[in-house]
Length: 364
Image (tube, rainbow, N blue to C red):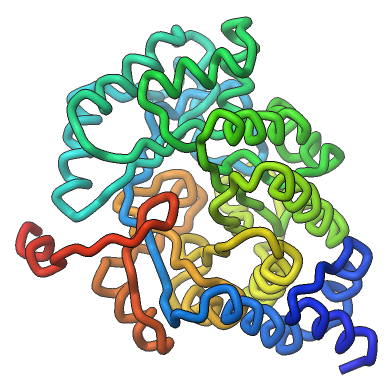
């Protein structure tokens, strides 16, 4: 280990903030083992309770009709294309009932940029859920919300307040991709800019909603773009304290228009580790078994991750790109326990849940 790497990582372990230049130097020059050691020490300092959390939820895509045509997406359809859909209340009800029966406490709802649905569709969908089930609604990524402001010609705060009144409780960090506009114009030119993405999160935090943050990497970005992405998130978190977790995941190139070599497991683990090192004001870092598989996700618990993400009773977008990992609650518990930690179900805001999993298993 070089003197500079040792100095920077020692500072980070002690809780001293590293700047963008230092973080880039570490990502480019430190070994995986060096980054992993530091990230794990930080994780243990922030979470000494020897616990790994996860949330039981279902990812419900209310529509796959989208006008964005992002190059990295294999899920979207044009409105008149075979397979295009908008969810009906009957199907939504069935999915929620199944989720609750499996011990789920949350639904994650995202969809495409549908050009012809009225805003009342989204309000009515939220109200339908709120009036019939006691389940947390985590929905509408920032690009969707910016699209609403443009399509319906309404101010951002007005849109968010209307959705919140209808039942929206928190916002997922989707659509971040890389928060550098020179990258965004290449991979998702029809989605909102970085500043608009950040503006949704800031306003949501002001209105009392918690959100998550994500990063999709391993396509056209450079290492400096990854660090810039982390930096702008850290700046906003300093201001609002509204992000509950950060989730980096790798681009899945199959069946997409964006041709790229899939990021390696080592690259994923290095980015996860530098995320834990740099994001000193984020309490939680999630691992991504959905894109990396069970074994790498388990290993990621020693590279800065303290949360196993979601049981994810349903997932469609990554599956459309040719990746289909599936884990049961029992498997997640076993992976966490085999790594030496105690598995613990949580809510979106990281409140812990006590549940009789035997009763849930008997319902299957």
